Structure formats: C-alpha cells, structure tokens
Amino acid sequence: MSKLKEIRELQNLTQEELAESSGISVRTIQRIEAGTIPKGYTLRTLSKTLGISEDILQNIQSTETEKEKTSVQENKEETTINYSLLKIINLSSIPFIVFPPLNILMPILLMFKLKQKNIVAKQIISIQILWTIAAPIVFMLWVFLRLRGNYTLGIMAFIVLSNLFIVIRNTIEIDRKQKLHYKLNFNMI
Image (cartoon, rainbow, N blue to C red; front, side, top):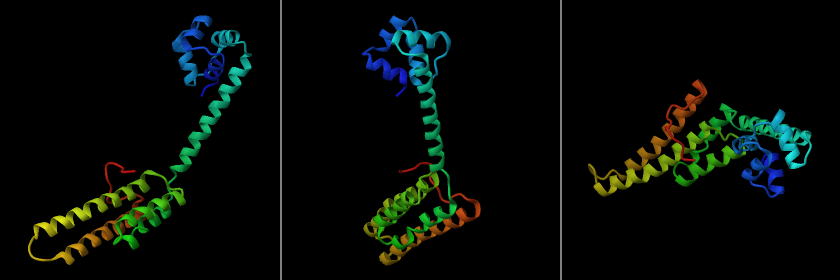
C-alpha cells in the first residue's frame, strides 16, 4: 500500500475528498497511490493538505520503491533455471510410473524443495498430469472396444513405456539444448 493511501485512509478521506481539499486531480492522486513519486507543487500541496512534511511522503515512497525492486529481484531468483535440478525433477517420476498419482506428486515436491518453480518445471509436471489423465482413458477405450484381440497386458506396457520414453527424451533435451523436447502450449499448474 502506498504511503499516500495509508495517510489518506488514516485521516478518513476518500480520493475525491483529498482531491477537493487539495486542488489536485483525482487521477493524479490515483497515480501517486499506484507508485508515482510526487514532486514539486503536487508534493507541497499534498503535504500541506494532509498536515505532514514533504520528506515523509518522499522517503516512504522511495522505501516502497526499494521494496518493489527487492520483490522483483526475488522473483527473478525464483525463475533462475538450474538444468541439472530440472533433470532430477523430470527423472523423479520414473520410479512411480506405475503409480500414477505419485508420478505427479514427486516432481511437485522436488520442484518446491529444490526451489525450481519455473516454467520448465511446471511444463514437466503438466506433461505428467496430462499423461496421467490420458493413460486410463486410452486403456479403458482399448478394454471396452476390444480392439484386435485381447492385448490388455500389451496396452498397459505400451502406456507405461510411452511415459518412460517421454521422460527420458525430455531429460536428454534438457541436457543437450536446455529445453524440453515434448512440451505443452499451456501449464496445468
């Protein structure tokens, strides 16, 4: 929350009331509350109207700007991609391919534990979610339609091996080109 908004609310003023008493437009007050630092006439007028010194408005505004910069830097650090850790996250679903909910849960846990909450990690997990949804559908269609004989065990093996192939192929691409070979145009998480 901006300092101007905080002081205005402490004095039980609306933006319109502050604009009327100060002669500053409502739009200018909105801009200042959104983060624009007041200067010159606007700063002097608002300080007089609110009964505070100009320094208070400017110092706190700059402190908020520093906090915003720190927040942006923290977000950049979160999105820093460590490809070795991404390979671990991707490969973590292999032991759980035959237990579909765990092939999603393990990469999610590792994503948070290894602090790799980035677009590539989300894509890896989204692929596992999509596979977990699609695999039972394909299996049930095969069973109910009884396509070309009774190859139920074969279709189960095919489904498991397809996920294994996707995981290994993506790991190879992460190692070689630092990107995913199989990726979605959207994220499910």
